[in-house]
Structures are given as C-alpha cells and as structure tokens.
Amino acid sequence: MISTIGLVGALALLIWMTVRGVNILIAGPVAAALVAATSGIAWLPPLAAAGAPDFATSYMAGFTGFFGNWFFMFLLGAIFGEVMGASGAAASVAHWIIEKIGIKHAVLAVVAACALLTYGGVSVFIVAFSVYSLAVSLFREANLPRRFIPAALCFGSVTFTMTSAGSPEIQNLIPMQHLGTTAYAAWEVSLVVAILMAALGFVWLQHMVKRAVARGETFEGRDTDDVVDVGRVLPNPFLCLLPLIAVLGVFMIFQYPQQLGPLSAIMPAESLDKWALVAALGSGTLIALLVGLKSRAKMPEAFSKGATGAVVAITNTCAVVGFGAVASLSPAFQEALILVQNLPGDPLIGAAIAVTVIAGLTGSASGGQSIALPLIAPHYIDAGASAEELHRTVAIASGALDSLPHNGYVVTTIRAICGETHADAYGPVGALTVIVPLIGLAVALGLFAIF
Image (cartoon, one colour):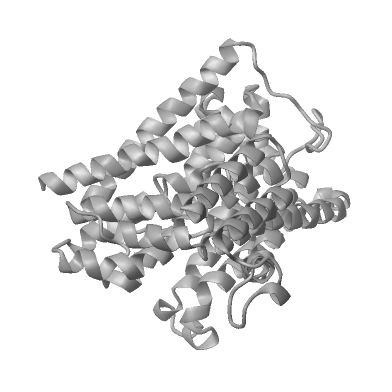
C-alpha cells in the first residue's frame, strides 16, 4: 500500500513540479527519490543489501543509458535546426509556403513537415529540432501565437504518424519482435484511425489558434530568434528544401541496405537505425551549410547554439528516463504489471489498458510497450487475440498517456527547443497528443470488434 501511494504520489509530484516550472533535472530525481523511499529501495549503494538495487545507481543507469544512446542524434539534430535558421533556409521555405498556399495554412505546413519526417523514419526527438526554425518563420509570417508551435510539432510527430501501419518509428516496430507481425499489421484499421486523428487533431488545433488570435494574441519575437532582415536576399526555396530531403533520403537509404547491394556489407543491419540517423542529419547539415554559404559568418554561432541546446534537451529527457528506471523497480509497479496482465474481458481492451497505464507511469511510449509486451503478448495470444490486431492496438495505445506533462519528448519540445512553459503550451499539446490518440484507440477497438 505504501509503495502504491508513493508511486502515484511521485508521479503526481513530478507532473505538478513540471507544470509549475521546476527544472526537470531537479524534479526527476526528487520524484524518483520519493519512489525509492516508499518502496524500500536504498538511496545510496553502501546502504543497499548485497545484490539489491539502489536509487542513485538505478537512476543514473537510466539517465546515462539514454544519454549514451542518443547524444550524437540530439547534437546533430540541434545543429541542423540552427543552421537551417541561420542560413535563411527556414525563412525562405516559409516565405514560399505562404506565397503558394496562403498565410492561413501556416499551421498545416508545420504539421505536414513533421509528419513527413516522422513517417520517413526520422526519430520524433529529432523532428522537432529539424522543423522548429521553419515553424518560427511560418508563425512569424502569419503572426500566430508562438505558444502553439509545440502543439503543432508534437501533433505532427507523435500521433497519426508515429503509431500508424508502415511507420518506421520504434513505437510501430517493437510489437513485431513479440508478435511475429510486420510493420503493416492491421493496416486497414490503422489507415482509418490515422485519417481520423489527423483530421480531428488539425481541426482542433486550428480552432485553438483562431480563438487565441481572436483574443488578441500575436507572435512575440525573442532576442534568440534569427534576425529578420527585410532587405536580405534569401536562398532559393527549392534549394532550401534539399537539406530536409537529404535527411529523409539518406536515412531511408541506410536504413534498408539489404535492398541496395554493397551497403549491406558496409554496415550490419542491427546497427542501422541509430547510425543511419547520424548519417542523415550530418548530410542534411552539410547541404544546409552549402545552401547558406553566403551566411557563413553566422555559422560558428549557430553550431555553438545547437550544441548548447542539444545538451539541455537530452539531459531534460534523461531526467525523466531516470525516473522511469527507478519507478519500474517499485513493488507497486510490479503489482501493476501483474494486475494488467490478468485483466478479464476482451484481450484487445486488456492490452490497450495495460500499455496505456504503463506508458503513462514511465512517461514513454516505447517503454510502455517494452515492459508490457513480454508479459501480456503470450497471455492474450493464447486467449485468442489476433496478433495483427494486438500489434495495432498496442502501438496506438502507447501513444496516448505517454504524453503526460512529464514525458521526455514533451519536456524537451516545450522547454528546451521552443523555450515555452508548460503553463502556456501544454494545454494544446495535451489535447492533441493525449485526448486525440485516446479517441483513435477507442475507434480502433470498435472497428476490431465489428470486423
């Protein structure tokens, strides 16, 4: 009982501190320490029994593990975004989009850019870095409140694309190894749900933005924004699209070397996902430098800002990952796993609840799947669930409560990339990344029940 109160209380405390603006590097360890204190986990290694876990070691294992796995991707992603801004590439594309499709479609352009990169395989953590400069330029041109930029970035990245059939994101790939399915499992239902989430979310986002504009909200510039020089000659917009195309194209080439002959001998397939992204972001940054050659004097500062931003962004995420590592050790968490594993009724509904709850507790969609699937997959398959339907249910379910305020991607996007506060920006983010996916999950379950 004490462990349960501690786990729930720690999660509530973490969310409260995050929303109140407490630095996540402080909020994460404090909340994790509360979990340890109420779960009988020693705070320091000398206080732990032989072979028993302790708070400090477990927290830092989660923290440094994520840092080691993702630092180069965060670094190159942040530098890429800064170079796109400093070179004038983001502004040029923004001007072109406004000219061709109209200023009223600025939000759609941001969402579409994120969706394209996400479905192309670029990690959701990197998409926000890559599109942020473009988003700022578009919102500035359209004079829209910049507090909605995080919502546009998150909606385009972690909803209708991340968990859809065919998506190369890890949230769609993890079920394959446990269920023996393909990335296109239950694609018919996935297509319906994706279209529904895309349409519903976009209409809702547009409605929120229009209401804010009607109240008098406008775009507010910052000293850290790229300087807008009215007389500046921007690069050709079609050339400026090349860096984004390079990121997507190079990633896909290196991700599927078995189809491209010699590449399969250069890099083993099991190492491709991560390092393909490094190659892609490096290529995109190089092309962005060439496109913005006339602005080369600004590049040293862009690289410096990108490096600093990358460290802030990844450590924010690591702080939440560390909390999840400690939370998963608590007796209450283990009891929750047993409980969700034995939920009665429709196997798909049980699986959806299990993954949704665990993703919410850990603040991670992939974490929720990785923890839940080894336990529930055999049980629900034996209970008669279709492997393909279970795959799609689990994928969609993982993308709902994972986006609570303490989620690493949410914290990184709102605070480190966009420089907003949760108080200003999380409302739209939560509506689009929690409520919309939950509606999509309900529709998917309904369609599976009917057909």
